[in-house]
Image 1: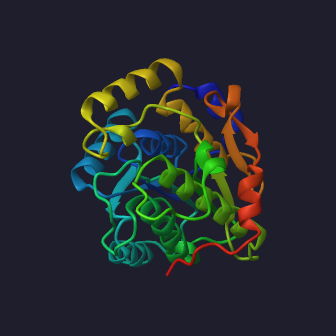
Image 2: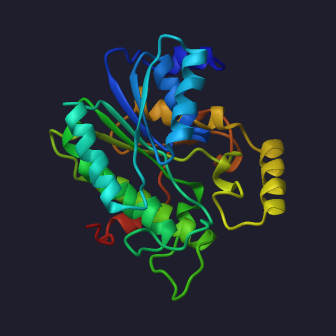
Length: 289
């Protein structure tokens, strides 16, 4: 394990606790799940693709032979899948201690979700919020629910333009809405509800831009990854933001991000939600049903 000194200084042991991580078969989600397993938690990888989920479990077991690791399937682009996952999770566990929402899409190949919503907003905001609300009763005041947002949340517009393509603007708005949701949940947190926090991992090279996931041309994806690998930090380091929010000394409503220039990379620290998100959180958010 890299960053062991950071773990020793900033995280707490998680033995006896149950954690769920969405989008955990690759990228930031994978390294966050591995980090939680390293800290002793029983970790459930909540993934869309079974083969990739199984392979991710094997990767973690190969490095951490005593890890308590398993996977369950969920597709955030389908209300039916989200509801089925929440029911299956409740049947399997009476309590969840940590829940990290890490799954998301960017420039998706498919334009709409199974329920007819624009894919980017449907997954990154609507599907994520629906899942959060569906599993909320499994977490109590000792638990934590953490949402992966983005530096782009400050550039998100409140309203979707007519016939808007599933590109940067849609991604920024989805993260803008998600960040505002976290602020609202933290402000209205009930006595029996978990701590709510957000984390933006800066910029890193994950498979979010891979040709099989996006509508980008393969050459653009390869060039984009090359640029990110050279000028930003690794997914493993980016995942430390989530691990601090999940297991470190943080307060309800905290936002965690990299401490480097413009929040692009670096070790995590407590930061602030941008003014645009705070203003949006003061108003009603789009309904999720």
